[in-house]
Image (cartoon, rainbow, N blue to C red; front, top):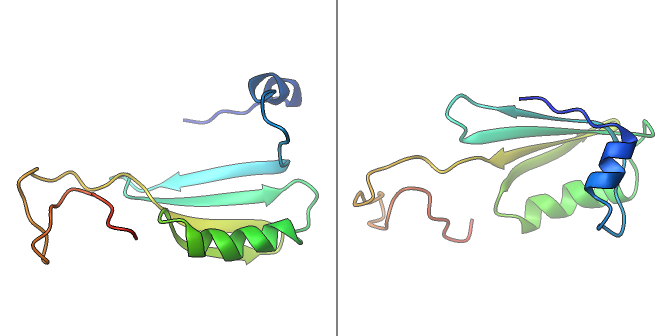
Amino acid sequence: MSEIFTPAELRARFAQLPYITPYARIVALVDSEERLVELHEFHARGRCTGGAAWEVYHYARTSPLVLDARREGARNIFTLRGRPPRADPGARDRRGGPRGGQDRGR
């Protein structure tokens, strides 16, 4: 699925937010089982400074969804957890805990 919004559509859709960070494009690549997402943020101004560096540094350290974060020029690239694996609700993992994607902190 692909959605492209005009600036006016974005303003209407997100008018309740105090600010919006502009990107030229955001692309999400998802594996066939939807377990991993690779998110590419292309910065609108063609350069990546300050806030973008903070974003890559901190998101990888604070979010249980972010498995990896890196920068390539004006682009931030994140590898994210997708959907948890579908498993038998009674199944146990190697450590004896419940299986099926329940997050245990990271």
